[in-house]
Length: 148
Image 1 (cartoon, rainbow, N blue to C red):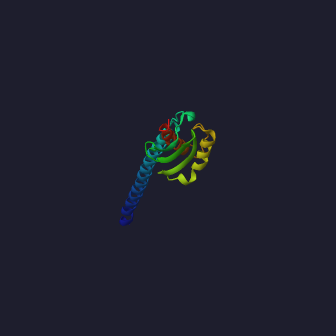
Image 2 (image 1 turned 90 degrees about the horizontal axis):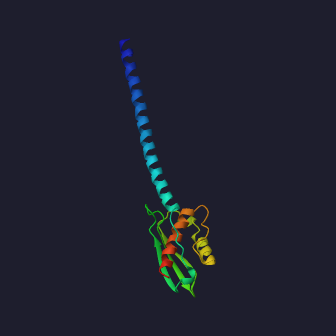
């Protein structure tokens, strides 16, 4: 009987240690999650506040201009475009490339059509891709700044 009583404390100690390890792992995962979430929110805040300056489309010089946007603090939305101005109007915007992993879903061609039709950068962004749309608008703004 002495052996049985000696075994019980070891089991309890082992279970306690197991729970402590589980709690430590949960705490570490929680800290990592909070840190990543904070970084994501900072990047979203930066993208939401990205200013799109007014470009006077009536003052554009004919030519083809390349523009790019660096993509913000984490470079998630970096992109490049080629803008063609003919007879003082934006006639074409071509997507050259992007580091955005979701670039296939942004409907950038729809955004480009809106800009060409309005002859303005003050257009509605693509629903569900607002932050990426703003990054594309910034690249176009940077191209058109060369055309003034």
